[in-house]
Every structure is written in structure tokens, then in C-alpha cells.
Image (cartoon, rainbow, N blue to C red; front, side, top):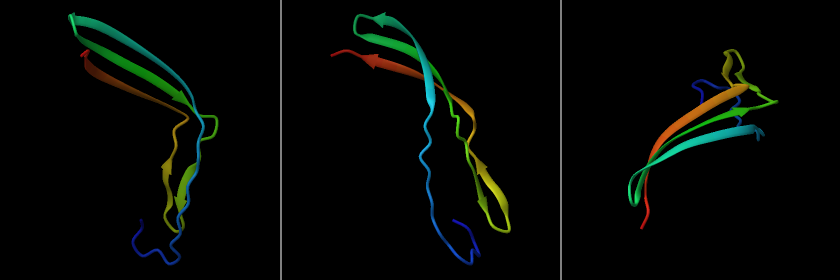
Length: 75
């Protein structure tokens, strides 16, 4: 949303990505495990979103990463 926008519109885009992911998992008890997960995503199409009279407000990165720690319990 923008303040003072004279002609408000909305738009969206679907962006495909190639991904790679890896996880390291360790058992700390008979039914409890912990792990670390990390991944990369690469996008051949990464648009930039602009507002008139403002300029670029967001650019989709060509490559991004994410990581997470998790705990799992088997019942």
C-alpha cells in the first residue's frame, strides 16, 4: 500500500525457482531427534517492483537461502 497514490492498483507474479536442500539429523533419545536444515533457491526471473514517482521498492533476489533448526518427536 502506498500513501497518496493517485491510481491504486494491485498486481502479482508467479516466480519459479530451482532449489537445493540439505539436512543433518541426530538422534538424542530413542524417540527424539534434532536437526539443522539449509537450502538455496535460484531464480532465472527476478523482477523489480516499482511505484511511480517513488522508484524501486522491492527487487526479488536471484539467489536466496534459508536455514532452520528443528526438534522431532516420534510417537
